[in-house]
Structure formats: structure tokens, C-alpha cells
Length: 540
Image (cartoon, rainbow, N blue to C red; front, side, top):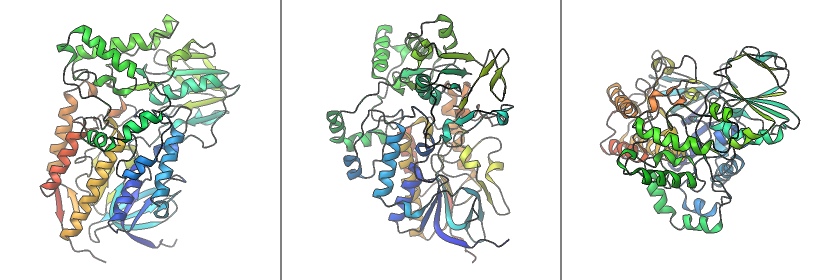
């Protein structure tokens, strides 16, 4: 076998979603030679793969978009308050065309291995198709929710119907007309997809492991007046978002707690957020995610209203969540609970009646066999770390990422992990990532990385690595913030509970987008404290 010829770049970026595209643009502006590797056949990341019925963003369109280009944000027109997947993908393609990004993106190219050689001070990235690319920097822009997980249920290979995971949905779509459909999972994705599938299928069986909270989305057309009102003050709103806790200017910053407020005022505040819709409900007060008593009051308010449309008391009981609200990802829906009044929809509680196997003709639980023509897995992702660990990243003669994270992921500022030089991660573990408007977090990380690389070149520095001490200290801060809240005590994908054998570590940073930004900026101003910046000889 011949050794593939190595191509040389300043940086190899893995992933062509929001993060990879913006990273490419910023490094190009510095005159660097960059290549982006993308497993799909076009740009889009999450919004390329997740084409399932009802796929929609739960951050308002006017905020879920790039802020770095004033002309772009003024010119682009959103049609809905909350954009659906097709419109977001059109927007991403528009950005790629506008900035001429595709010429430096290799589609249908999956990175499989990446090795850093301390002697040459270079990364070598190998692809599934046999390409070998060498660069001083490797930048992982693989996304937090991109490694789709299909549960290991016996018998899947025997199923004679069609099955799909919502995280890699076919471009041509799926016709459910006249079909008996089963869907496993009632998290955010399932709650979006189920109402649309129910309206088309002959019968829909919903297999629910955990009942979840959902707030009405209150989506609708974005009027020209509403759009112009935002565009006239876009600069101020964007700055507000950058320094807010969640990266969303439209979310209020609560200054009082449920337990210190008159109950009537609490009821009014909750009702106002309920009527407004969307996932900002738990930000009505500052103690909902911190105090069990406050959370219980919020939980009871939501349960009463969200289950009101369900006619059958037995179904209402099955659909009632039992964990503290907001400790799993809060869902937002359009007509989700109403579908359980339909005669062609049945709910199977798989905690009470566990799945045993998939058969040639359907799915078997302990108590029954469910005949199915189509099976849908809305079972989520190996969040935050899954896509990173899917690439075999290592140091020649030294450590590798899988071993370094064997007891749980640790990364300084979510940017770098100690022991592996010149490897940047965008929205990695220990950053706000999934607890924020991810576009705001992506922009912050990309800009910080680009500025750091510019600083290194200006100073004649060619190697950067997170110090073990700084990483350990940052991990303690991440843990302390999480442990002061209710979130780590719920078995969620925030702690990896959905992946068998994954270490239970609360992965996102809970201190807020604004605090995180100020921390990162101060570290840079002080000469990149916590990072080891060195100049090393580079062998040929």
C-alpha cells in the first residue's frame, strides 16, 4: 500500500456547521491556508443532518444567526419567529455562498485520525478516504449534538420495515401515509416530530421512557414591522446577548427569587412567560434551578397547563414528569399534548413496560407486540464529547484524548485539553455551549481562537497547550457552579446519562455566556494565563 501524499496547511478544521464556517472565514482573513473537512455532502452541520419533520430552532430566528457581518444581518429575511430546519439550512448556504467558503471545504470527507508530532510540531489528520493533511493547528468544530446514538436493542437487523434516526434523516423525506409508525424518544426532537408524524400515519405508537416538560413555542410569521424593530437596534441587542447569561437578548435576567416574591406575583410572572412561549420559562426567577422548593412551584405551574389539553386522566398521569423542571433540556412544542387525544396515537410507557426486542414486523415490549412498518429513533446524541472522541486524536508517543477523558472530559475553558498541544475545540466541555444560544458561543470561541493564533504569530510562538493546573482549577469552577444547582442530580445527557458506560460528569459551564466571555478576554489580556506558550524547533 502506498503512503498517501501529505498536503500542508496552517490549520485543519473538522466540521462545516456554524463553527467550522466561521473559523474558516476568520483564519482566511488572517491570510492563513485552511482546509475544512466535512462528512456531509454540503455545509450545515446539525441543520444538514437533522431534517426530520418539525425540526426547528428554539431560539428566535433574529438571534439565532451570525452577528459578525452587519450587511448580512440586515439583508437576510427570516419568515418565522422560530425558523424551521429548511430555512436555517438556506441561511447557512447563503452565508457559505456570500463568503465563498466552499472552495476550502472538502465535502464527503470524514476525519478518522489526528496525530500531533512534537518533533515536527505538526498535526497529521487522516480521512476515511485516505487523505493525509498536515497542519500546525487542528481545530475541532464538530458540534455538541452531532453524534447520533441508536440504542442497542436486540433484533434491529431483523426488522423488515424501514428505520431512521432523526439525527441523520434522509434528504428526500419519509412518507408515513397509511403506515404503522413507532417512535422511541420524547425529548426535544420527539416532541417536535410526533405531532407531524401523527397527522400522516395510519397509527403512531410513541414509546416514552421519560415524560418531559414542554412549553408552547408560540411560533408564527415574523412580520415586517417586528423584523425592522429588531434590525434598527441590532447592534445593541447583539451586545446585550454577548454579555447575557444565555446568549439571548430576549431572555430577561431575573433579579429575584420565587421564594422571596409574593405568590400572586409569582403566578403572574409565570403566566407571562407561559404566554410568551419558548424555553425561557425557567429564567422567570433566579432560584428555579437552585432551590427545590422554588422549582416545585414552577414545575406544578407548568404541569397543570401543559397537560390541560389531554382528555384521558390515565394518559395525563403517564405524561407527567417527575424530575425538577429545567434539569433536562426544556422542550418547546406546537400541539404536542393535543395529539394524545387522537384515535390513531397510543402511548407506551417503557419504564413500566420495557422494550425487549425489535422483531421482523415490529417491536416487542414485556407486555405486547407492536406491529410497525416504520421505526424512528428520536434517541438523541452522545452530547458534547461524542463527535470529538469519534476522531482518534493522540500525541505521537504520548497521550490520547480517549485516555485523557476516561474519567470524564476536562478542557480548559472548553478550548484545549492538557497534554495535547495546538488542538483547539469550539464549544467543548467546560464552556456554556448547550446552555446557551450556540451561535453566540460559537462566535466567541472562534474569535478567541483566531485572536490567539494571531498573537502567537506576532510573537514568534508556535506551540500552545493548556496547563494541567489551570485545567484542574477550571474543572473545579465548572463543578462548583453545577453542584450549586439542581441540574447534576438528574440523569440527563448533560451528564452523559443517555450513553451506557459514559462517565457521569456535568459537562457545560453554568456561569453564563457573559461571565465566560469576560473570563476568556481577561485571560487573553494577561498573556494567556493558564496556557503554556512556547517556541520550539520544528524538524522537517
